[in-house]
Image (cartoon, rainbow, N blue to C red; front, side, top):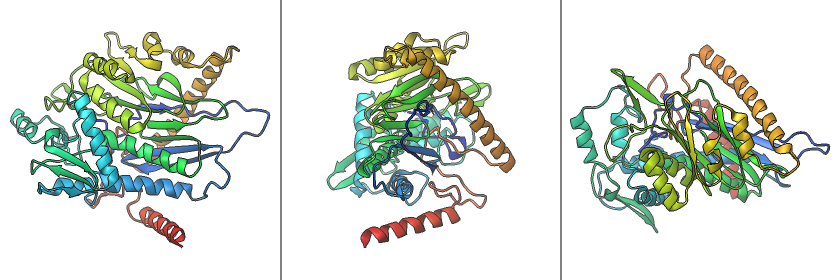
Length: 445
């Protein structure tokens, strides 16, 4: 299994689904308000947009978003020793281990997709991920011995994991079994924020964590517009621009997080059936689904399966996806299903061509021109942001904590793991916890 979420915090910087959240052209009337929040979470960053918030929308909505994401980490992070998942992993008990309803729900869904994906999604793969230097442990950046891989394969397997929804609990039948929900928990976090905002009355929202995203409603009749990055090129090049409404999108790729040893390239996408990184020509998989948890899990699973088996499973289960395959000559070949099938023949070297295919045509000839403005403006904006980020990283001499997935935290020079919600493990977290406590006290009163 992958995975995009199994990379260490300092390596997770690949935004595999690239946002092109550009507002519609100015209208004569005053445009509705667009609220925005950004911050660190899960070893990467989140972005939330609320278009046209309802009357009475709470001023502290950003704090509530931060609190919700912190709860996901407290439940499912493998980087937080106090999390439910970490405590379950550390336990050798074969009895039922109580967890939150959310953790039980995510594990239950992961086990279902494990069966449907022919074992490609495997949440018990954590020991293999660590052995290949893509987990929270020490990174030696060289392949493990074949004997080690064989031994670790004997210690994994979803058949050794059981879940109970009421009362929520997990149980292992193998004492050393460890789970890692990184391939599904990031999407679950997106869904949690969407549900939170919906509960506050927001109808038009955009929620993205590390490239996995979900949208609800629209922007004054205009679809939310997102892009899919072209793999194996320098910078963030949008290969496909696609409109979304009331859908989720997640992308899994092998082109950003890897290491080379003795001239061989080893991807972070690990096949749990062999114990080795995948070796195929599939560069990235993008999945569209009703919820982000499902899209996240299936993007990983199909990336493990490869193009042929992945398409078979996708066709059997009516999964909407876009595959980018490496071809001789450098230009990827695109194969899509559902609404993404239109991109199968689009030239990925020309984002404008791809955008014209995806743009909804209102019959007035404005679709192509509108998308041309969107793509051009988006690429200029991203270039400015990337340059600013690079200058900041260079001047600060800090590694980029990133998005190729995972519920991760960086280690400070003294060896302490930073809070996964705050970039500063001391002051920022203390301030946020104080704000959350004040909010909880107000709610209670």
